Image: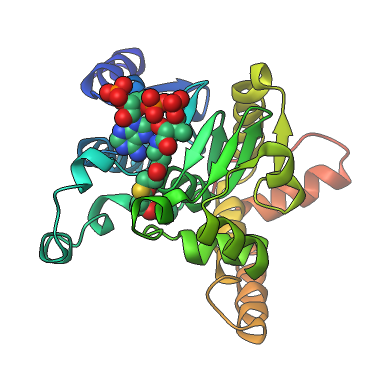
Length: 270
Ligand code: CAA
């Protein structure tokens, strides 16, 4: 059995393309492939899936921050790896399906902290997280069209739902990059902060979320996500049921009692 400190070290050294650390109840996963601007090669995405499986099953973790380097969150799928592939190759191996979808299927909240380039699959990975905090240096784009393909990891879907048809068409069809200011204006990112504040801001957001009652956090995330998958009437019904379900948790009793007692709630995550 490893102590927490040992486990952190093991996790940190186990990966070639990631760095994983913990601050309190927040896990910070840093994409680490500096030679290729964190291009998402197959091995990196497999490691990322594994790291997310680990944070999902670790009760001590209440939220995850996914980040990259100052220069790049991620510059997309690895073009060198993709270049020789044929249709039959990508179809038979179901390319990018198996290891690319983990960030968007986590139950625990996951925040993308983006500085520098978030392009192609990099932008798609960030959009698959629950929300994006961007450094003022961030640049987002779907440049796949410039290399003879199209976005394949949710870019035509999540981007369109997030910013609307016109902006999505502009970005997907021209490959134009947008800066952080434009990304915030169109609703792609939740906040823009000075680059030197990026990680602190994301960790603070993660700590804040991790400090709330976990069942209500997970229920809230599930409810927001259902807005993408259901018609309004069904989404409202689902939200109402989850809202009712929250009254079965200790967190509801404690949160409301603490409010009335004018004290801080002590959540037990039950
Ligand atoms: N794949 C593989 N290698 C990449 C890469 C990628 N997506 N992006 C950058 N790199 C590598 C470069 O080849 C270069 O390696 P070498 O030093 O060995 O030549 C290194 O990273 C540094 O890159 P640049 O020299 O190009 O750096 P720059 O500062 O001049 O330009 C950039 C930065 C504008 C981001 C440019 O690297 C670029 O345009 N990258 C490709 C972006 C792209 O097209 N992404 C979409 C990929 S397709 C996709 O993601 C499909 C999908 O939807 C799933």
